[in-house]
Image (cartoon, rainbow over all chains, first blue to last red):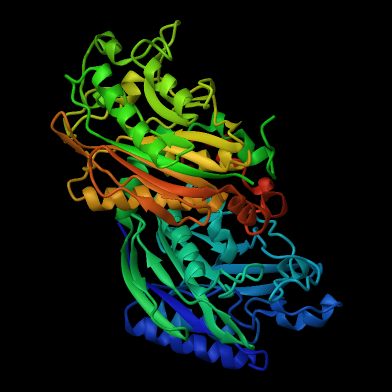
Length: 308
Length: 308
């Protein structure tokens, strides 16, 4: 069975004025560190080429099209693919995708060590809202700038590991984890940009946000017996603070590596993917224990229906 | 909105030789304590009238029918209903149910302060196995002695609170929580009998078992914005040790009360059910954020299907 050193590449804030080239240079530096540590796979955050622009409102969405990639790899991102190949290292990162049809998605990809894109995921659980809402401490307009992902939750076998993706808010939704778990996932990578302040609750700050983040990742990993890397873009970005808390979690739901800063920081841990098998064949042996005849509401009922 | 003092009534082991009357006397003492603390609702463990007999193998299952209740209330349990009425206190407890048709279930009920049974739940996620397995450190024969529950996951409005039930191993399955969450649940009660040792893994002992327990409860409460009471039967029982760790958890997924012993112990906390509304109307506003078109595997595919 496969053992591999996993690298989670936390990134500090990316300011509006920062160019793609400058950001890619930061990412290349983290890849070089990962290579020095013998990493076989590196995970970068959600939307890691640009600032988290959904905190800003523009009436004409097209004004923000410059935050989106129309090619992957494109001229600015090709060096990442080249480095992956040179190091023989797989990678995942998130970016904003503008399709030839003009559709906008919050996207992440897995790239194999030969430079091929082996999985594309488009964020399904978009948080926030679509219109300007003055009662919020800051805007969170993901529902304005992105369509909900249309590709589902998929798992790919890459580097002999069953890998799946989710993005940011997806991590709070056990449905996302279970869709991946039902495909035998062994490594879930989740990038995030999470404001340190709940924009609708003054009492919910940094500590509580970090707790909910870690709780969701550890539960998802444990309940699907999978490794997970949750990777922050964090710290101050355009005057807004985002949580750090990048972690690597094992299939028992234990944190095995954790970032200490709110800036560019690489953490690593060795994964022994054979360890996924125990949970998957015992307490979370889905074939033996799941009772789908009682899960009907989950896939047929979107919102709450109170009992009569 | 409703505020209520919740009481979680942890129970120490019940030995084989202990009579129903002796157990009910212990429960009545805990109810009296709860009444003294002003509790409006008290939760007892899974299978709280008897020892956890699925750790023992008998070839002829009928030999164990004496652990099952054929009436509820019956002569031994009527005093619990009388006490609930006298105190004006709702309650939930778990027991083994033998139906007139001869079917066996691991069951829990909610009883309203007027003594009516307002909800019956039959455990759906039965752990363990159906035949004797010598490689285990101890047997866990729930699949031998019980049928999987046939009533689904339901929520009842009792004492102006939307209450739901799950039992023991159910707490590890986000499907159980979400089925209840989709009915607006505000209080989930889960009794458990959890061996301190994973019977297939010598390295998984008390601390890890307690961690997985608490992780599952806190995640389920947070992700459905509901209060939860998780109540142990614990300590030494017929020479086997079970985890304690009884907790009351708030809709933010924080532990607000926790048992300190492994014996009969009452813990209480005040619930302000209005606090469930914030999560249900923001980050876990299911109508706004769930994407059921991508949850198809969850309700149609029982076991793992690896990607092609």
